[in-house]
Image (cartoon, rainbow, N blue to C red; front, side, top):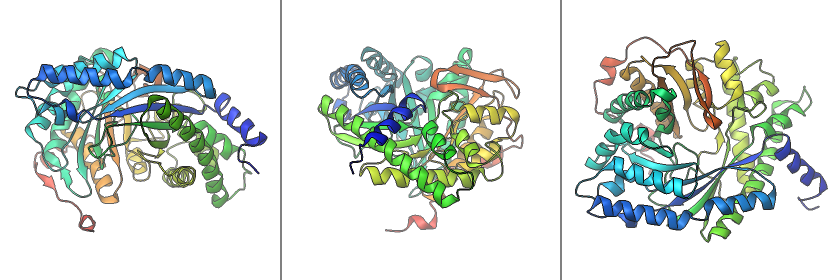
Length: 455
């Protein structure tokens, strides 16, 4: 029997029309290594010309494919080589200028975001890395579509605590410079451990050093589809049946996504890269990872058992995905961003989902502490402590972890940060008031764990 029988077609239509299945992003990943040069203005011109050349049809082709397959493509994005590498080739680097060039190129080709204002500093910083990091607050203030990411740790290198300390300050500065929009600059800035170079999702997307000249990476989402599948199971179905149903659903989602991704890459004349099967939620009712937990039988996200439910969900999604495609990559799994998930927002608002519980959940999710709004007066060293904890989880567990924390200026617990669109809104969450200052000020590097020596 063909996989594409009448039942499968009807199921896919329902996934799109009723259960919020979409292609969350098509991301053009593009190398800028050939744009290096001594004069920063000439480098900027090369960057603009290359991006607009490769991405000139990205938006229109995506719209054509939406029409062809009747499936929404929510975001059109670009990811480029970490700009710290490009800027340090200049005699007098001006990273804010380069950020503006990226922003102008993104605007002119009509994409939602451009990622790659990035540096990889897990073992130490070059002069270019330092300059880029220092420029982040102004760069994100003066641009609309640029996203920034810094890799601070890895299982092989340990944790660069000097950079962790610096990023606590940078996040605070970035939020303060965009205070009129509830610190939205910090929503476009993420700190990573074990960052992948093929991730199509923002704010962490960049084009890895070992990637080809250009490729098309796809991010598919479908929390609503998975929730519906779980709800349709018998109430007494055991966890083996539950996991199998999630795997089957992930298989269908991945098949749909790869079909769209390969067609898009063909139209653009570039290789298909990877499909990232991440259950990335939205603020829309029904499109929630927290809703999946409820369908499994938990009263709400945050209840005892939430971490176990997330572990099973993440694993089942990946197993289903790799059966459907040989090119699953990026961050594939389940995201738990607070502001972007209606169920998470409600759980945080009720106080049943706490910061500490979210940290525990990051041990088994596909990323980490994501889109969490905290009081604007949170000390820089406390933010650095949050980053250090998350980097340690990733380093020890050989997984990608990330931190996207927003210290919302002039707001505190009980207030709301409002961003709109996919970024949603979030209640300001309470954080631990104990000091991390002396610990963070030690500096240096936390050594790599013993299991890193596995060559």
